[in-house]
Image (tube, rainbow, N blue to C red):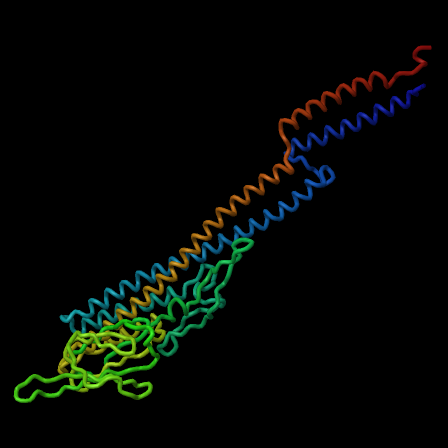
Amino acid sequence: MRISSSTIYDSNLASLGQQQTALLKTQQQVATGRRIQSASDDPVAAAQAISVNQADAINTQYGANRTAMRHTVSLAESNLQNVTSLIQDIQTATVNAGNGGLSDIDRRTIATDLSGRLQELVSYANSTDGAGNYLFSGFQSRTQPFADVAGVMTYNGDDGQRLTQANASRQIASSDSGADVFMRIKNGNGTFVTKPAAANTGTGIISTGSVSNTASLTTNSYSVVFTVTPGVGGAPDVTTYAVNDTTTPAAVSAGTTYVSGQAISFAGMQFDIKGIPANGDTFTVTPSTNESIFKTVSDLITALNAPVPTSANGGTTGLTNTLSRSLKNLDNALNNVLSIRSTLGLRLQELDALQTAGDDLALQFKQTLSQLQDIDPYKAYSDLTQQNTTLQASLKSFAAVSNLSLFNYM
C-alpha cells in the first residue's frame, strides 16, 4: 500500500498537536495544582466537587454564625457577672445597714450609695452588643429594654429569644428576655411572703418561712393577729395569736399561746416570730409574686432614707423586718441571675463543641476536595517530563521525514 508524503506530513502534524495539547494540560495542572481544569476533564469528580464546595460554604457560614453568637452570649454573661458582683455588694451594704449603732444620717449615706448602685444596675440591664443591639430586650433588639417611668422601672422589650442556626440541625438562643432576668423574680421564699404591718409597735420579727406540706398549700392570704391579755394579780401578761384567712374571711386558729421563736404552722406553711409583739400587732402571709430587682433595691433605698422611730416600743424592729425581707429578695434575684448565667455557660460550651465539630468537618471537606481536584505532584512531574521528552522526539522525527520526496532520489 502506498502512503503519500502528504499523509505522512498530516499524520505527524496531528500527532504533534495532540502531544502539545497534552503537555499544555499537564503544565496547567502542575502550575495550578489542580487535576480538573474543566468539567470535561472528569465530569463525575467535577460534580462531586461542586457538592462538596457547597457543603463547605454552608459549614463556613455556620461557623460565622457561631462566632457572632459567641460574641453576643459572652457579652451577656460578662454583664451578668457584673450584675452578680453588684447584687453581692448591695447585700453587704444591707447587712451593714442593720447595725444598731448607725444613725439616720449613716443609713441615708448607705441609701445614697445604693442609689448609685441602682443606676449602675440599670446600665447593665440596658447593655448592647457594641452594634446597637440590646442584649436583654428579646426580639426588640433596637428597643431599650428598661426605662424609669414616674419612678417605676418598666420593661419595653418582649419575651422572645433570638435564635441562631449553629449547625444544620441546631438552633441556639443568642439572647434572653430582660423580664426573665431582672423582673420575674419571686419575692419572699418563692411560695409566700411574710410581712409585718406598718402600724406594729412591738418587737416581733418574722422569718421568711418555708413550705412544710406542699399538698396543703393554697393561694389565699392570711393574717396573724396578736392579743396581749394583762396578767391578774401580778401574773405575767399572756400573748396569744389568731390566724385568719383574709381571702375567704374565716378563722384558721384562735387563741393560740405565743412563744417567741416557736414555729407557727398552717395551710402547708411554717414560719416563726421572735420578740415581743404588742397587742394588735399583725403579720400578713400572702402568695409570692414577681418583684423586679429594681423594685427591691428601690424599696430598700426608701426604707434607709426614712427616719427610724425611737419612741415606739418597736424601735428599729420595722427596719429589721424590712432589711430581712430585702435580703431574702436580693438572694432570690442573685439566684435568678446565677441560673441565667448557668444557661449562658452551657450555651458557650455547646458552641465550643459545635465549633470543634465544624472545624473537623471543614478539614474533611478540604481533604475530599483535594482528593477530587488536586494532582498527584509526583505523577504530574513524571508525566510532564515524559510528555516533554516524547514531544522533543516527535519534533526531531517530524523534521526528518517532513522533506522526504521521491524526487530526492531520482
